Every structure is written in C-alpha cells, then in structure tokens.
Amino acid sequence: MAMQFTRIVNPVADMEIWNASSDGFSFVISHESRDGPGFHGPPGYVASWRSFSRNPGAIRVCGSPFKTLTEAEQACNAMLEYLTAKLEEE
Image (cartoon, rainbow, N blue to C red; front, side):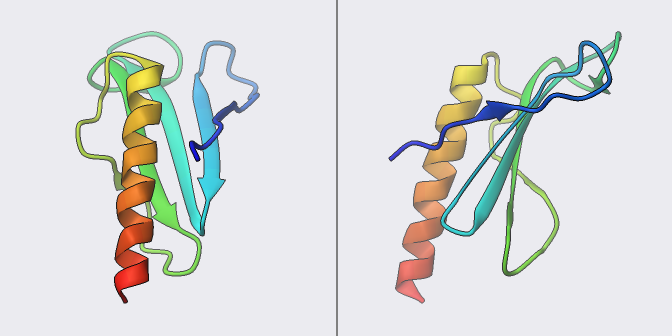
C-alpha cells in the first residue's frame, strides 16, 4: 500500500514540505530552489527518510532531487518496500 503524503502547513509562505510515515519509518519531501523562500539547493523535490527505532538521522532517498512530487513519492514508496523487506530478513 502506498503512503499518503500530507503537506505540512508552516509560517513560511512558499515553503513546500510533505510528510508520511509507515512501518516504523518517516519520510519527508521538500521542494528546493536556488533562490526564493524555502530550502535552497539544486531545484526539485528532495526526499529523505529516517527510522523511528534506530534514529540514525535523516538519509536522502537515492535519486533526489526529483523533477516532480509524484516521482519523489514513488521513490519513497519504493524505499519503504526495500526497508521493510530488509527488516523481514533480520
């Protein structure tokens, strides 16, 4: 089942951040640009994840930044599938 990302409401007008969690993992997608409000970096949607139990800090999802929010969501869902499969092997 695909995670449902929700946009986070924050006081910075044009800052775009979405989050979702499932199976002990938290995912965040942020939109970055070279200038303007919000996060600065290579343009696109940057996805990251972290474990609730292991707390290693945030880890960037391979392929970030993505051109579209949909691509970032798909990458997060693929990463979740990989992570949960690894946990089942342990």
